[in-house]
Image 1: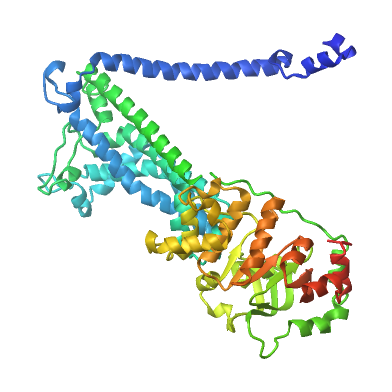
Image 2: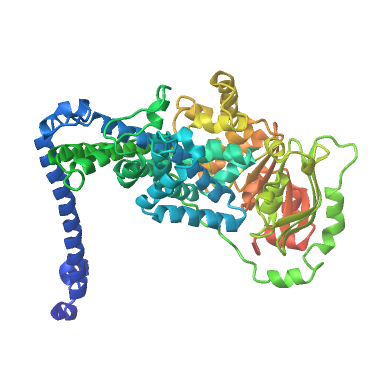
Length: 322
Length: 297
């Protein structure tokens, strides 16, 4: 290095001037290698996880499992499939998302577009942070306490002694929505804050009210952000176990309550893929690990498809506007 | 998100500005004051006065941006507001359709009349449909060309009226803005894919769609290339047959090319007002003479 410094031919200067790793200081090189190691390590973990689940899943998977309900059986051969947990996962995700979306998007719009008084705006933001930081088992226990109140009987059902059980798709979905709210709120708020003030001004200058501006300009612009948050929220709902175990009851099949179609399912208890995996794994009742592997595989695939699909949707809606 | 970053505006600072504001009366206004008062005064019997600004002062907090300005805005005329940065011309323009109200600290005294009626008696939304504005940065909405223009015509948050009703109105607005030949076949294309000059003409079309009486242009060409600037300047001259136009510009040649009347502002004061030839060739105030000659600015 010192020889070339004393001898600066134009080509050599050019070569030395290039930023090549071999010229870096030792500490920089060590840090770079450490970053590489961490990155590759994470990839290995993810690949191992998916690889192992695919291996086990395909090994025990049988398409008939997808269309048969769980059954009580002494052996794994006659314990049925997991149709109703799949329905339960879809139903609960749908309920949670439908409840969360208006609250989260509304809160984000209020914070960014109005945000007065500012102490209330700060309080709302901290409240959402608190909800985001609460473990789902705590949400579950709180939900059980809340929805066991007798005024909430329409959301679930009463036991024989008249006490409200508080466990149903509706009550579990309501608490699940709290998991999705912070995610949808944050991504919507970030997207709104990225819209330049001049776009809002352009709308006001055309004689539009604040609401018309929000409805016709801002919400369409932040749709990709809302999609992203919703996808994350749906993934979290579909993957949560604590709320299902506590608030959806311990029944593996759908147990409708009452006689009104659809409502009876929503008021009843059931299971999801997560609770099915838990119940069938050695950690739960523990006598059908093969079913647990197959169900976990299906859950993983469903969540990957969900993330992929909504990502596509967000990209397309972004493309349409630009 | 899909928006281009907005470059900060160029600020030109006049080094002796603070001293001038500390001594009222020495602002170059004194000698010409009487003549200008006469020029801006309401001429009884003259038709075609669309808007009138009377003794308007606007302050942001404690900072006075516009001081006791009186100005007429007439039909079939382009009024250019010129002056160095920070002289209050944009604030004055924005006050014409009450956009200044969006700034929480802005307070104003005096009155602005639209067809003889105080703008404060009108709903802000009605006023802004009648007095429409185009901004310095082209700011189309991230939606299709059609929806951008139709946005102004559609009722507040609803989507009605339907496409069949909107189509001729959208076409008319795009034709008036001289954009129809270029985009008529691609109305469903996203507006943000247009070039900068086309985007700005789209913004003009959008502003024209609701058939306003007055069109406000806030340095509409300062973000555009010379070719687009020329197209828009031609457009402005054509449009004055249909609407009264007020344009804020930094570009003195542009003011000379497009305007009929010119108001020169300096540090919040109206220094000079008159027909374009008079202001550029025989200004009354010393300050105006220096400004149009390029001595400062």
